[in-house]
Amino acid sequence: MNKDPQDADKDAFDEEELIRSEFDSIVSGLSLDESSPTTYLDELDRLESINHTERFVAPNPPVQSPRTFFFSAKRAIARWFRRGYHEDDGVEL
Image (tube, rainbow, N blue to C red; front, side):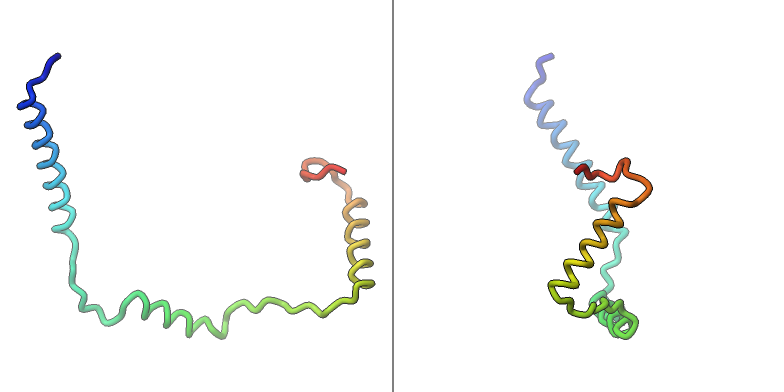
């Protein structure tokens, strides 16, 4: 099972040569032509300007007083307790 150091060097060289040849074959298929009329950033700007009017606008709820906030929370908790199912909701009181 002892290998000669020369055999190990030869195997390493073959592996490096294989890696280089694989890399060359991948790179040879790539086109480095940068003559396209637009770039990725130009496309993003165009999409942003188109969607600027169609974007989602978050609702702005009216300001509540502490009293109405408390009663709203109280109603929400009461509805939660009165729901018809209680299993598998991940909450235990």
